[in-house]
Length: 39
Image 1: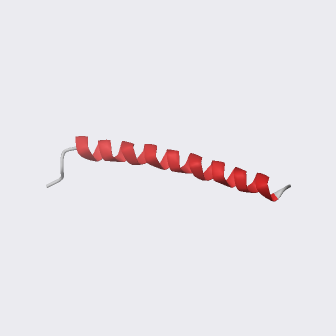
Image 2 (image 1 turned 60 degrees about the horizontal axis):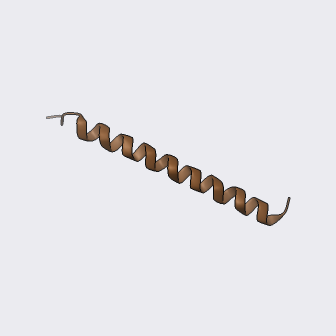
């Protein structure tokens, strides 16, 4: 397998992981904001 292909694959994986993390982060923030604070 050529080096360039591995690099592209890793890059694509990182981009996908970043998008997923952003999505999860937004979900967590919205849950924290909408849930009432604990005393």
